[in-house]
Image 1 (cartoon, rainbow, N blue to C red):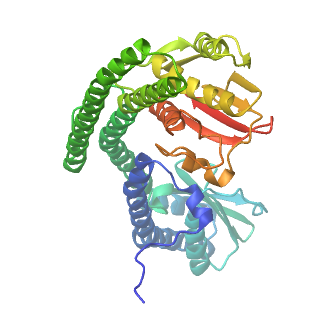
Image 2 (cartoon, helix red, strand yellow):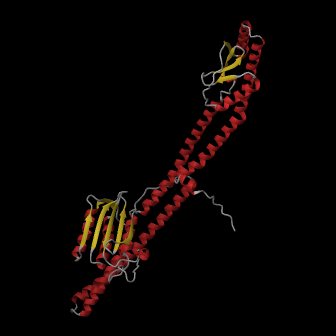
Length: 446
């Protein structure tokens, strides 16, 4: 069995990962840098700083042990004064004897507990007397006190005698370097992602039938994809133009004999066969118009912001002039970016489809909470089985025992309506209507 090379990521961790290309690219670069910086910092503290600090603490503890031993050998005031002067001159230690004093019983916690542990260990190894120290009270000094006979020997030592005080400089440089590398990574990644975003915008605009001034730029692979997209767009446009020109030519060629036949039948004696022939000619003319409308699609018409209420009312008025009764419920002030003629044709197809198969039809137009508008055409007809909704959208599809089949239909009404909606960045969906029949719902972006 072949082994899968795909890395399995737990669902909980996957939800925390960024979803955008920019975020993922940034994570790919920053995560290894952060891990490396942490590893280097840890190695520095463990192998260098901690080692140096331990040696410094041992040296300081040795000097303090010498001072305590010297005091215990001769605790006279003159000897203590001599000891303090020698420690100050040669060891930078400030020593004072506090007669009758005791060691403090508490100590304030330090932010650098590891450093305090080093000093604690060093003093434990060198001193037999009880001791106490504080590294937080003074910025540059450490307060160390040792219990001796008749009092406490208080010693002030420079902080750099016990700790490697330059460690924070190293950490600062690490942080600055990390921030600089992150800023450079963000700049370069953002430039690369912007090229992909522009390519996506151009593809989206082309899908809506809009012109988009797009030029390949970015990385070599992105430019290659962009040039392939431009070539594909040119081929698709050329194909659409050829198809439209072909069907327009066929439509024009067919209209000429149809017109002659209509003139001849208009001059002929009325009879039953003549009326049937006129019906056939009307059906042929309607089919030609439908084919041409489907082939023409959205070409030649620019999308623009329009008042949908006026367009919808116009479609409903046309249907009512044909004898239909259509109820409307249209919210005020509805606007959307559409191609007016294509929108009227698509909505008229849906309304006519409902009128042909139902007794009651209702058109509802509302604004969506998330932005955009919804236009619903409901009826109380027989509807379409749910498992055949997608089949109904196929061009030239005429479902048996369904509302999509009528005397003069060619199975293009729903296909034209969905192409119109998707060409504007929306969609057309079918569902069961609350009236008992079919609901055709057009969703358009704002």
